Image 1 (tube, rainbow, N blue to C red):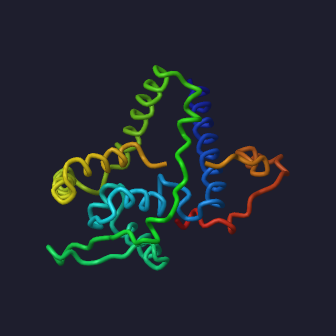
Image 2: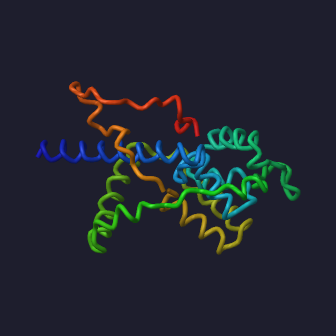
Image 3: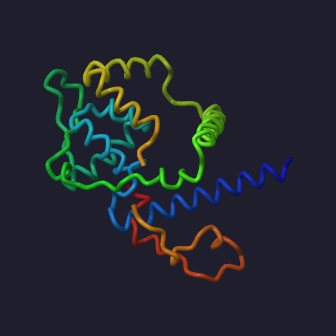
Length: 212
């Protein structure tokens, strides 16, 4: 049984590396907005659907802390993609707005469906169920910093501000995650961590992926 656990863990590690490699290559094409499942790319993707939104609501929909969001927004604001302004209805609320420059940014297309086409409909349903159970197991070990009451309050406030249809659309995006470039052979895979590996190693300093 331990061999099965090890095999599954190694496959997850390999998959994680392949996904990171894909993001790094995409980063070279689309810069800080290369990955629409995290960082500034995900923020911009959300704002393209909801160009004006309270920062607290955006933080909840993204599933990140307010402080982390503010740090990313500060970078985007400095680059001219967004700006923040106090709400006219409630001065305590800060609204983030998408600028004309931000609207013109072209985001990469999600191509994960091409990878998942190797599975049939029933297999995809099973995989989704298995992954959900694994995610829940991890989440039970690392509970959210927000209690259920606060989460419900934020959801109700966001729904009231945006309207049911727009809120449900953003919520669906949050649940599935936002996620086109070809993988180059010059970028090594997990084999580079082997003690016998003597191939090329990418220079991470050329990418700002980890700072997005």
